[in-house]
Amino acid sequence: MYKAKAYSAAGAASPLASDTIDRRETTETDVRIEILFCGVCHSDLHTARNEWVEFMPTVYPVVPGHEIVGKVTSVGSKVTQYKPGDLVGVGCLVDSDHTCPSCRADMEQFCPEGVFTYNSPDKHLGGVTFGGYSDSIVVDESFVLRVPENLDLAGVAPLLCAGITTYSPMRHWGVGEGKKVGVVGLGGLGHMGVKFARAFGAHVVVFTTSPGKVEDARRLGAHEVVNSRNADEMAPHAGSFDFILDTVSADHDLNAYLNLLGLDGNLTLVGAPEKPLPVSSYALLFGRKSLSGSLIGGIAETREMLDFCGKHGITADVEIIPIQQVNEAYERLLRSDVKYRFSIDMASLKSE
Ligand SMILES: [Zn+2]
Ligand SMILES: [Zn+2]
Image 1 (cartoon, rainbow, N blue to C red):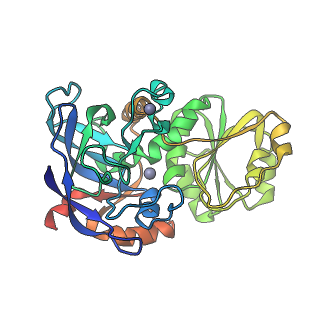
Image 2: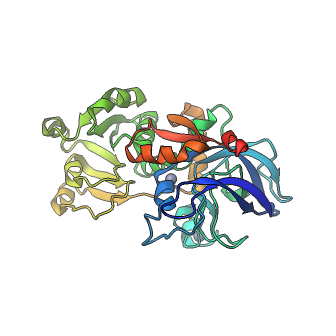
């Protein structure tokens, strides 16, 4: 074991503060990573404040962070894919059983024995796993991802959660040239959805309730922007979409979007509203439409996404902050006051 610097929360009502945590020494198959940037995901805030107590209660102290980018500092004797100095990333997962049907299908995110990057039982040290608000992390090489050298690292970090969460369903549902694709909501997830849909060659329409986001949506790659509160703007799009990605976590009317799907169209949810959303079966019956969900992506697909981002020059739009501003960043996140993701410069942890 060695001591690592980190920022942790001691309880649901406690702010994040400087702390020292235990990390394991590298095993034969481990990679030790010096963390350079870590994105701030809404899940970090939910977990730090124990807001998912019903299905994933938080064990304190908690060190959030699952959008990790860094540099390899040492590797175990049996590591074959990475060497010191390599640029790498770690996302939401750090282990799985490798044998269940989900793992065999390269979808480790659905493994019943999957280990999340933070607040998951730690098989090595006991207790729970600690995430990326830290100066370093030790991860089995099968869950380490290579980062393209040509991309801005602060903007790469959010690809590890927000990026793969939007990339995976678009690939699954065949977003590409000749397809009309909608993105509902323009936040951390939505802005990545727009960039990917555009890069895949689709015709991209952004739905927003904020008139102030119209210009930005176009800059990010939208061909059209629709104010979803304006029925006159929604009506001409009825029955015309192949795919709609819904990134909204607040209560909203799904049927209004299901009506916009064409034959065999699909609406995929990646946000998680607190209460169940009513769905009209008629909106699905006519046109054989489907409604589905999606959760991050497997390791192979995350690697594919990073390669795609390298090739197309795609990163998240970020506001870089020192770790000392993370509590303020959480408050701003609650007000959607960020374009479009906070990325923590982990060099700021050295002064703690
Ligand atoms: Zn996340
Ligand atoms: Zn498995």
